[in-house]
Every structure is written in C-alpha cells, then in structure tokens.
Length: 424
Image 1 (cartoon, rainbow, N blue to C red):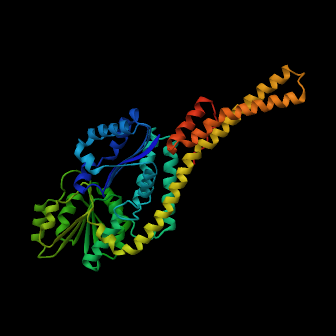
Image 2: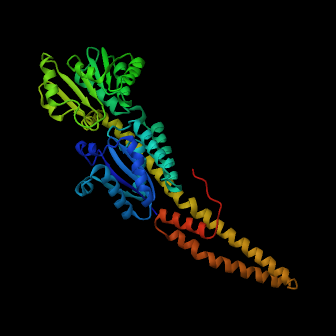
Image 3: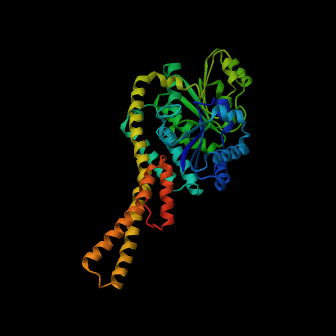
C-alpha cells in the first residue's frame, strides 16, 4: 500500500492551462463516484490554482490510469499536458507535499488562509462519498493539525493571508493612497467580500459591488457600506472608477480588449488598474497592452509577496522544520498503528490458545510430576516463541511503512484480531 500525491498547480502549469481544469462544485462528487469502483482511498482537491489527487493504493499505475480516464471525461486531457505539467509524489515526499499545501506553504500567496478550508472541504467530500478509510483519515487528520501549528507558531499567520489582501497591497503600491479612488468589484464571492473588507480598511473613497445575483451583492454591501449593483450595471461603472477587481465565474472573457478600449476613450487619460483574480480569467490579457491600462492576473500577484522576502523566508524555514517533525510523526504512526498492536495481539492470541490447550492436557494427565509439568510448559513456550519469531521480524523488515501497515492489517484479518486501534 502506497500513499501518493498526483496533480498540477501554479508552479507547474500557467494560468492558461489551469483554467481548463476548473470544475464546478457539483462535478467534484461526480469525479469521485467515477473513481470509486477502481481505485483505493482517494481525496480529490480541485481549486483555482491546483488539481490534485491524494491516494492510498497498492496499484499506483492502475490508479493513475483510471484518474486519466476520468479527468479526460471532463477536460479532454492531452497526454503531452499530463507529462509536462503533472507531478507525482510518493510516501514521505507525498506526506510533506500535503502538509505544505494545507499549511499554505505551497500556495501562490504564502500564508493565505483559504487553502486549509479547501483541503478540509475536499476531504469531507471524499469522506461522505465513502472514498476514505483508516489510512487517509489518519493522514489528513495529521495534515490539519500540522497546518494549525504552522499558523499559530510561525509568522506566516501574521502576513498577508490571501490573494485578496495581496491585490489590495498591489493597489496601494500603484496609487500610494486609496483615499481618492473608487473601486469596482465584479463578482460577489468569498474572495470579493474579503477584498472589499480590505479596501474599506484601507480607506477607499467608495466602492461598488456588482454580481449576477443582486441579493448577494446587497448582502456584502450592507455589511461593508458599498453600493450593490447588478452585473450589467457594474460593467457600465468601469469608466467612473480607477480600480476594477474581477472574480466572476463562467467561461469566456467578461471584458474584451474592445470593451476596455471603448471605456478608456471616456476617461480623459486617467489610468485604469484592473486586477483579474478570476479563474478562468475574466479579462482579455490583450487589454493590458492598451495605454494607461494596468492589468494583473492571479499569476502576476506573486510580485508583491517578494517585498517581505526576508521575513517570509524565516517563517518558511521555521514552518518547514515544524512540518518535517510532523511528517516523521506520521511515518512513525503508520509504522506502529497496526504493527505493534498486531504483534502484541497475535502473541496474546497464541498464548491464550497455548494455555487453554496446556490446561486441558494437564487435566487429562493429572499424574505428571511437577518437573514434568514444567518441562512441558517450557517446551510449549519455546515452540510458540519460535513460531512467532519470523512473522514479527519479517514484518519489521518490510521497507515501506504503508506495506507494513497493510501486512499488519492482513494478519489481523487472518487471525481474527478483532480489537482495532482508534483513529487519531
């Protein structure tokens, strides 16, 4: 049995590739249901910037082939893209990758808070779909615990924690002060709401929130004091504001180069700063070539993160040390979860049988002298010890901790060692 992490993210695939793999929430369970009959334990993690599968399986190649088939149903995945953009980690390397993902060390914006919730949601989805068992339950439980330690014991928790906060930092860098500028948010999702809060705290002169669902826009506007608009009305406001942040779902560009070009003619030379954090992108990248238009997409935002590189690097080093210790604990847990208890229960089981049979033998042979009784007892103990020696030693010789776990589980099944250790 092996634990693997397989997928792609913002470090291996550019946005024009990643946006092809975005799935609506209702399709996630469908992917899991199609994988269920032919793979082992699986957690599927699809976000804007990563598509990953975490698996506990004893048939790695077969499981990967099945993933390719299923993903191809939704995305028509090309073999060349898989080879170029997808990565595969196994064992401790896969544990480390999962822990870094959950702790936001593998995020585009270091320390962003959303990823831990996304990993938890992905795990819960797989759990409810019946796709997890003892191994993944234990591994993900430890991943969540490790992520909490990173956030509470390092400086990462006190740095910008989302793409939204970095977007606002970038706006401050462009305009120096936001007090004289109005902002338009196109899209009223969680990221837009968080961005709006940061903008209010930064003292913007006013902002508009436009969304396809007006009630959602009104809800955010009521909380933060902005003006809610229907999406169509919001698009007309672009000429009046200086900062536009887009995060609207759907395929196709919401704003084309021609749209922006028409808007700029009415702005009398005023610059327009557009932050496109939508995946798929909402704004035609060619619009960034227009004079006085500054267009940044989600892949561009990492430049702001470099400003605090020194502090950030120290936090990463502390977090990596912490996570390495947590990964070592996980490996030890996998080694001992079933190994020690199984060997102990196996010996206890055989010892109970030995004593039962010996008592029956002594009952039927009550005339044996004390010396003879001791000799028979010593003989049965020695015999039992020799019978159990090789299984105990050979189990420890298996190199893979996942395989040791599986062998121990099989011993438990074969010899009816019914007492199971509890999940952490």
